[in-house]
Image 1: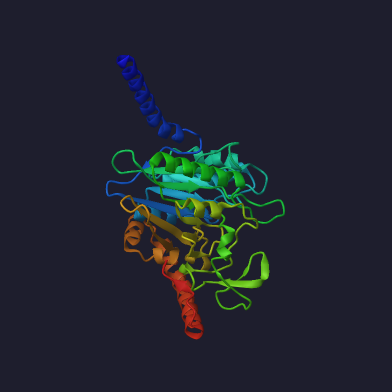
Image 2: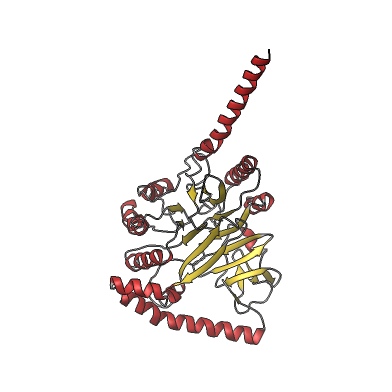
Length: 401
């Protein structure tokens, strides 16, 4: 009797052990989760966010040259491309531009995670799934086409494991925030995507025995961004109308912690499908990083979550695009409840010593010379404007990134 009980108990323990080992594997193979990435030997993990490249025949050469220099200077562990990347009249033309962009990362063995913006398939000539197939043709792509599982194309989870062993340390949530709703407004993350996040987050916590901190990447910011800004009835310098209500104006609020500069009105979706509330309720999201607004490069800490936008990464020449650039996010496995971030604008990038050395090596000096020359005027007038506004109004309009 005792032998039978012992064998039964042993079998039960063995089954539970096998099941416990199988859970992470099954979770990673569910079609919505990539294979885990890993923190480096130094315990760090660096992400480069590239967004809104809007590649065309006129800007692709300079844009990919600058992104190549940026990759070599920054040495990121992952590039996240958050939409509006290359949109042309035909899939074949789009493929040519996507190839130029992906070669930057593929040639350097930098993993790439892609999701889409409102423009990536809006012309109706091809689908998001067809565009995702273009990016997934490259070995460096870890992007997932979620098929019929969720709304859109490009919603998935990237786990980051410890530098040693296989302990889950951090998560990156990638969302397709859609293009437009039935009324022509900007779209947002849909209800089924929110429910997938909630259920997956709960399952991870149950398996890990604790919340796993994370950050979110998507193209379109959540509607709560207007709650995080100060509403005013009077338009002033660096205050902008609500996208959907031009009678009210918004600017940085002293009530919250702010980062960077507000250069134009934020463009969220019109309807709220519960994404922000779900993230707040779960308590595992530190920050949401988006693109979409091109000149905006700011953040606001609102109800415990940093709502951040990043500038367009394209370079079109001329003064305006010198303030575009890319964002860097750095993680530390020993402090998973924190992160560091900075925005690098092209007009500052041209002055970085390591970039100058790389450019000299590759005979790219003329491009950086153009950046420094044109960027000087862009930066000068931006700084002058900020100085004058803050001097005469006493209101802070630029915060450290």
